Length: 122
View 1 (cartoon, rainbow, N blue to C red):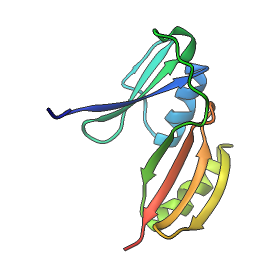
View 2 (view 1 turned 90 degrees about the vertical axis):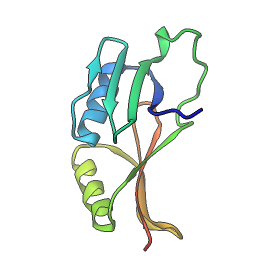
View 3 (view 1 turned 180 degrees about the vertical axis):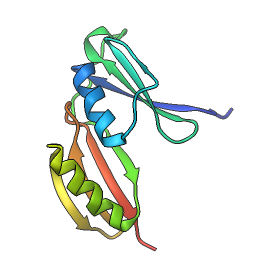
């Protein structure tokens, strides 16, 4: 069995704050938004859902920072994205750094989930 569509669901403390954060870093509006849930389209067949932690059934006991979202860029895009996000006040965990796989930086969303922007070597 294959799954034709994939949604990553993040459990968040404040849906509105998370919507604003992802609206800024993704550069798009959510497809759907309510007081306790929002859905952003990513690439075809992929979406990011933000679900308010205190209304999830069954209750969520997840800790913050336990997930990392990767956003692929070209090499120049990593540095440009970092500069843009810094100007927007996004919290940075590590600056753009050359790694064995390529170049990347890591930011934090309002709930402490990691957002890695990266470019692969080659």
